[in-house]
Length: 168
Image (tube, rainbow, N blue to C red; front, side):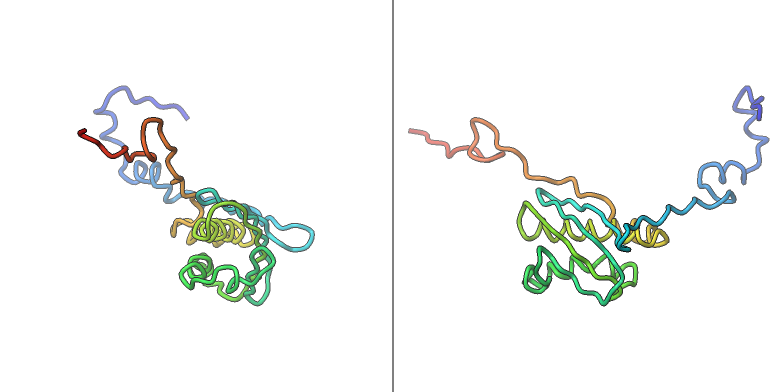
C-alpha cells in the first residue's frame, strides 16, 4: 500500500470512517483471545503483588473455598473488609463460589497481603478464562498498584517529617 499524500489538503479527501477505524480499531477483526494457561492438574497460576506483599495464587474449579497460607480466608483475614477485597475479581466476573483458590503470601501487612491475593486471583482468573480479561481489566484489577512506602531521608525524622525545631 503506497501513500501518495503530500500535504494537509490531500487529507481532506479521505473518508471519515477510514480515519476513525484506524484509531479506534472498529471495523477490523476483533483482538485475538489469549490462550488458556493451565497446568497438568487443571489449575491456573499467577503472582500478585501489592506494597511489599507477594502472593502466589492457584485457581481451579470448585465450590468457592479460599485458602491462604494453609488457613481458611475467614481465619487468616479476620476483617470482613479484607475478605471483600479478595472476592472483588469474582464479583466483577460474576464467578462467585465457582473457583477454589489456594494462595501463599509473604511480606507486608494484612492489607497489602489482601491486595496481593486480589491481584493474583485476577491474573489467574484471566489465565483460566481468557474471555474474562476485559471486565477484570476495566475494573483495574490486573494493574499492579505501584504505591510503596517512601524511603527515609537523612536529616529527617521520617521520609518527610523534620525534627522538632528548637529556638533555644
